[in-house]
Length: 286
Image (cartoon, rainbow, N blue to C red; front, side):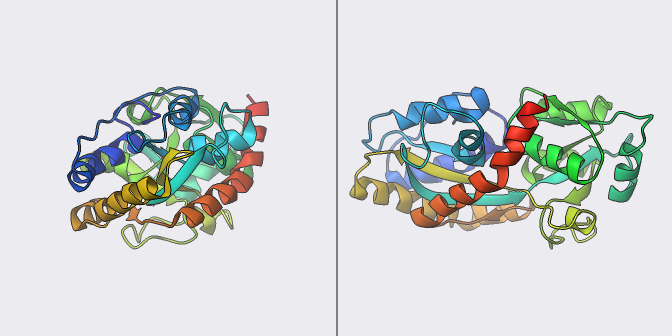
């Protein structure tokens, strides 16, 4: 796990930990190795023995965005063996229910005022939340300032306290806060509104073409044999297909979905092209 415990990526992995262990008939241990936007833990797996005992659960951060914008000690397309995607979830613009604007239009209107400097938070520089906020700010003519935090829980606290005016988050990490009424979704970064949040507008309604979807996937080290890779992939796919996992994500505005290794490779290339320029622009704007 190339991120700290308690974040969205870590949480999804832990939902699969028990069923994956049952399907593989062996103990599955989650080892958190955070740092450098997920590249430290990913590199550890890239150079691990390809014996099927070490895999990495990641997202497009260390597997597409970071390698497309700066040099990393591994190449995700050459040094890792893609197995399958696990889940997809659109990011959503979240504000404090008490201190924040009531609508997406109001948020954008207030953020455009020259007399007010609005901030948005994320779980770290180079994260998808950071780049989504950067793209939203520039495409919407908002000129917001990015404030990075150490993990998703710190971002939620900052939004509730009014230290930042908003953040792009997944429905998974904000479920309990939404139920308590402390936070509010203003917009969803999907091409159109989603069925589980019909009253929340798609940001594309204000900024045509705006989209940001977080995905999770599993990789093995390069050199892993076909038989071992197939055994691992089959177990992950069966774990993802379990109704309890599917339903849990669906209730949190996400979709459990697997892929072929070839489809995952294409997804990586697609996101390298989609987010590489944005990441370089955001880095130069620091």
